[in-house]
Length: 436
Figure 1 (tube, rainbow, N blue to C red):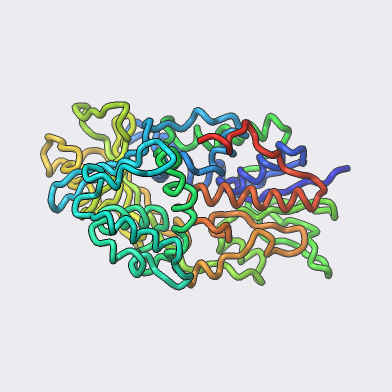
Figure 2 (cartoon, rainbow, N blue to C red):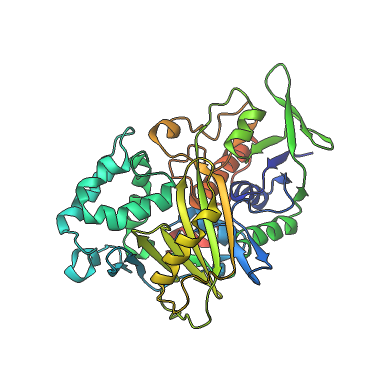
C-alpha cells in the first residue's frame, strides 16, 4: 500500500503542504492541535462587535505567486479583491499630510518618479538609493541601508518594512526585503496591487483548503496535539505520540512538521531554530455608519506618526495593527491612542471620549524576530531526521515570515516529501503563475 504523508499543523504552511500533496495523489493525514484550521490566518465572529473579524490583518500583493498558486489549487482565486492599480494611501498624523504611492499597473513602476506621484519630501535620488536593498549584506539592518533615503524611508519604507518584517527597522534584516523588491516592486505595478480577503481570511484560505482536502479523501484530525516523535536507531520516525493515541509511521510514510519553531525544537531537540519573537496587536472597532469609502479605493491606510501603522476596514469595522511589539504587551492600554488614530485618520465626527465597542487581540509570538542573527537560525525544509520535513514561515524560504512565506514553505516541504515518495507536485494549477 502506498505511503501516507502525515502533516502536523493546519496553519497556512501545513494546509499548503497537505493540499499540494493531496493534489498530487499522495495519501494525506492532517493533525491539528486546535479545533480549527488556519492558525493565525483565520476569521471568527465577535459577538460584542456583531461582526466577522480576522485574527490579524494581512495585506497580500498580486505578485505573491505562492499564494496565487495555492488559491488556484483549492479553487479560491475569487476570494481576494483589490483596486485595479497598485495604490497605497498614507497619512502623516503629525502634519496632516495625505498622499498615495501609485505604482500604476504596468511592468515598470514609473509613477513614483513623477513629481505628483512621489512621497512628500522624497527626491528621485532617494528612490534610486532604495536599490541598495538589492545589495544588502546579511548583517545589515533596514535602518542602516535605507536611512539615507530620508523622507522616503520615514514615510514609505519604514511602515512597509515593519509590516513585512514585524521587526523594528534598527534591527530588521535588510536582506529579507530583497525578494520583496524582486518579486513585487521589481515586476512593476501589476505585481503590487494590494489584495484583501473581502469575506475574511478563513473564507479565502482555511475553509476552501479544508474542503479541498476533504474532497480528495484526506484525513483531518483536530484537537490532536503531537506530544513526541519516536525514532529508531537509524533516526527514522516510527511513531507519532499524540495526547490521546499513537500513530504508527511506516518506512514508506513521511512526516511534515508545520508547527511553530519552539514546538519543532521541542519535538526534535537537535534542530537549530529562531528563538526570539515579535508580537502584533490588532484592534477591531465598530465605527459610525456615517463613514463611507468608495469601493474602487483601497480599504486600508498606512499611518506615519501614530500608534498604529496600518488601518483596514470592512463591513463597519476598522482594524488597526501595531507591529514589532516586544515583551509583555498590554494591548488594552493602547486602545485610547489607537482610537484617536482612527478618529483622526478617517475624519470621524464623534466624541473623542466615547470609545466604541472594540476587540483587542494580542499575538505575543506572532512571528520570529527577523534580525540577521535570527535569520541565520532558520533551518531548511530538509533539516529534520530522515523522512521528516519542516514547514512554517520561520523556515529558510528566503522570504520574510509572511503568508507568502508560509505558503511557499509548505510547498517546499511537500516537494521534498513527494520526491522522496517517488511522486511529483502539479506543475501549475490553473496556469496561475504565468498571470498577475
